[in-house]
Length: 267
Image (cartoon, rainbow, N blue to C red; front, side, top):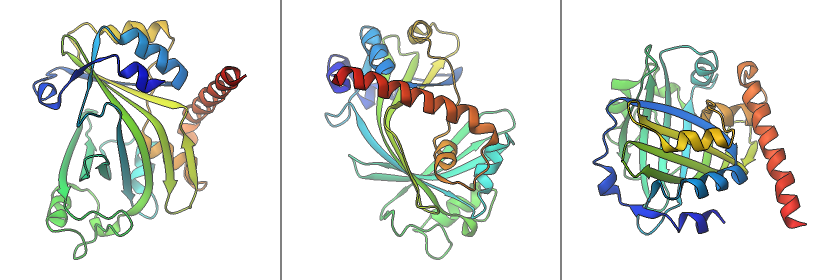
């Protein structure tokens, strides 16, 4: 159903999108259920174009997050401490491209992402330890990380599908992630959040945003959602989750509501 709606959108290429500069950028996340997302996509069709890459409009991604054995990066984020960092390998599944990324949120709450391409990435064997990492990785991490690279181990995997929309005036981008699944390498636990949709709006703060009014009409409110933190919270029984409990309850409510709607459709 989602693919059918997206097929009705006018496309925009990566080359066209590269010219979009959001100089006064505001980032806002929203969390909702897939049925609500379908309504939003129908409402937004005339005001947005969809990114198309290699003939695909729904793009598969996978991610492997690294952390210390005692989850120092997770705990720092959970406790709201700044500055903080995340380390991950982001894989563009369809195009077979893999990047090691370091995301840093500074004391002014601005996030900066630096990345380096990986030529021989193997998720089952990847290592960031000096002497075993790909060439260039050790220097890349040494310049950007606040902890020793040797202390980082693979912790959490996820996979999801992404749709990227751009408004007709090219003053904002909207990424929509669905089919979200997690596997925790330490605990062995899995978590399936397939019925959830994570929306991130990146816009020029000075410009009108068509989708904001649509989100208000659908009662989809702004809500922070870190895939690493939420995935860890749902798959590591020993992880600290006090401050994440409200978001975890919201996810449970949305998935239960989604399940009820799907049952009604089936009946």
